[in-house]
Length: 253
Image (cartoon, rainbow, N blue to C red; front, side, top):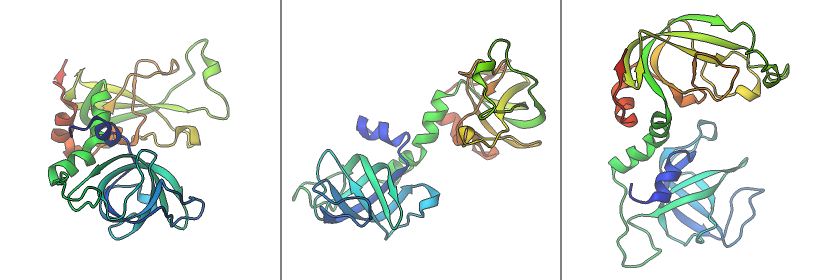
């Protein structure tokens, strides 16, 4: 993925798809005003999209691009952020790669994304999390217990409205994929269902998997790692893939 803008967007853009502009300067979504920067795109292939929107091949998406206006017949790989959901889907383009079949530059042969590139794009968010993680282990949750009290003098970080209600999960380590660890590691997680903690994985007793662990930024978490992103827990059978994405040299001890 040589294009730096494309690579950066691939790490966390919620929408990645291949499509062709059917109507430039148009919009199919109420609340997404049409102008020279918008276009209706017919989706050909979905690499990823939020499950809730149900984006499938054959659907149309209104794309807004600040860099260059969509052109009729232009076929491209789009990486985009959410804009509006309602009677349709509208997105804000972050990066675009013209591909074969594009009418934007007659006679020019734009690169065709192959299966390897599409797979790389699909894996990019997990790769970003794996590279950021301080420790990655494969293991099993062997204990759960509530955290009693907050760190001395740090009560101001916890309010009654957004109290995380921290718990500890003790993970028995089967394999270390990145970093260094002993036989067990401790993971702190919020048991609260408050919106402030939406998206945090919540381990369960006996759960097996691959855990992408991060040093906490909050001072009310002591002697434990955190896993604040939905991608920070992966199925047990994904260890080899996560190890490769992390590029780490895991060791025990």
